[in-house]
Amino acid sequence: MNEELVKELNDRLIDLSFAEDIGDGDHTTLCCIPATEMGESKLLIKEAGILAGVEIAKEVFHRFDPDMEVDAYVPDGTPVKPGDIVMSVKGKVQSLLQTERLMLNILQRMSGIATMTHKYQQALVDAGTKTRVLDTRKTTPGMRMLEKEAVKIGGGMNHRIGLFDMILLKDNHIDFCGGVHNAISRAKAYCREKGKDLKIECEVRNFEELNQALAEGCDRIMFDNFTPEQTKEAVALVAGRCETESSGGITYDTMIPYAKAGVDFISFGALTHSVKGLDMSFKAAGSDKLKI
Image 1 (cartoon, rainbow, N blue to C red):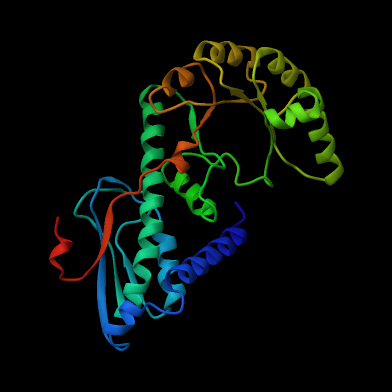
Image 2 (cartoon, rainbow, N blue to C red):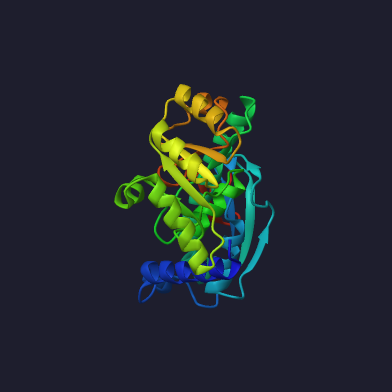
């Protein structure tokens, strides 16, 4: 992942988020908190899971007010439980109050994604498979970099970041091109012409398309809506000539037979589009609400 691109997009996300939340001023805070009043707040975990988003939380605080002091006690990727204190932040009370919601929105969502990803990946490991969990492009607009980072923190892998870092020939591309042969051959010609070193993946819907993809050659083949039995047969047919991926309606409850069929990857849109945020709160130091 291009670090400069990640930083640029995350900075823009933070700026936009503050603009939509604060507008022409946090009048609730401004009306009752003196500008010079100093304070401290602590981040309290209220639900077990995998923590993700600590590093971007620091960016939120420092981008809003460089004088805020952040002490993080728990790093990203750590299992947390109710009652854990993740960090304390000292600074102007006005700054603490105005950064609270954005920081929580990011940390809760990223931690929810990391927690779900860890659950999926651990289940595949416990089942004795080597299959890896992949995310998709079904992400929250503007938050893709953060959500995909959360997947990695949770132990999964990123499929691709966007349309620019991998070629994935899906059903619509194939149908508009007139078939798998045309789609893959055009992709290879495009890469040669543009001097692009991009992996090429092709989605197949049946064994006829699978055989065509194998004849053309590509880096990965995605079995779309295959049954576990068909997947096992398809993996045997591929015989290690390229990577394999299962996709299409697979859930936590149905994924194990696909993994045991021998695919290298299973992709889940649910990791980012249907996740529940991890419960946590940001409270003034000394508050009774810091106790579980």
